[in-house]
Length: 464
Image (cartoon, rainbow, N blue to C red):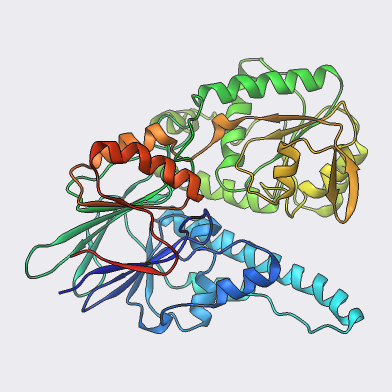
């Protein structure tokens, strides 16, 4: 019996994670992430599959980030008919993320088609719509952590807490064969210990093979406690000069983490009581999902919620839904904190706030997440003198503060600790990282005489 892995996406890069497990009896897909790139490349990569979606027997979803779940509606449109297995928190979060993704694509397509029509260029179609996302979400089936579940004739799946975002999972496949069963682990993405809100990652035992992320495979994070201190300093410094604090934040997890720390700082009277606006309808809906899935949170957070001190509810917190209220914040010159998407400043309401506030030296842009190359967020992190927003150049006069301690990905030390806890292993496959990060982790792990591989896109590797 042959067992192989086909690495479809998220190899030597941090976007579009998807991997196919093949046996003589089954085809199981792990993740179906959206590849992020320029418009033509985005459409071409996300609609080209080197497998038949109709023959997939099961899809297992690790978590709700778009680079892991975002291409599920496309697969359903192309013939995917199997069940999609994940945790209940990931199911509910994914529904919101996919509907938002579909809505954004519809809006972008309408905007581009207005221009193309004037120029006589071909009209475009969205990859999928919000309606397609709702249809795809009907295929979700939930599994609890630690529950061993039969998904095909020769495969069982067990999910363990990945400690990355609410409901995220380390996936373990037990693959049956005549000679000896094979146990394959998938830790993409993997979280850190002692993060606020969620539990620590769980390292499964008895693995033969491990697929491991390397987003920060060559880097080292400061302690998460440092994030709170730097957040306090940046806020106090900005309020002292009567400015605004703009925080581009991913609607899922990072927004909730920042709210957690802001709540603590306010309770400790470590920062002034100024208005805190979450300018994102998606973030509001996601925060509501957090409230209904307390079982996925750690003991400290649950204790606070039970005592009536939810980190997502405090006196000066306002969630902004309407565009009119969002626009009104730009006319309000008082000190305030504004959290808005998108996290990399490529779309969403944060662009309007940056446009109106980035040239004022009293203000601060507070970066709390990963900024990919060729994004506006990355240019702000690099403190370029001028940045382009909606096609217009603006002078970057606002203070830029980067807090790397907020990262929800394991760093090199944490990845190595996870590997050590999973030993012995026959082979490790390093994915979901730029090549320099994957290579750096490989160089460190190889000193332990481990068999390690950095697969290429669409490479197929036999396991036995």
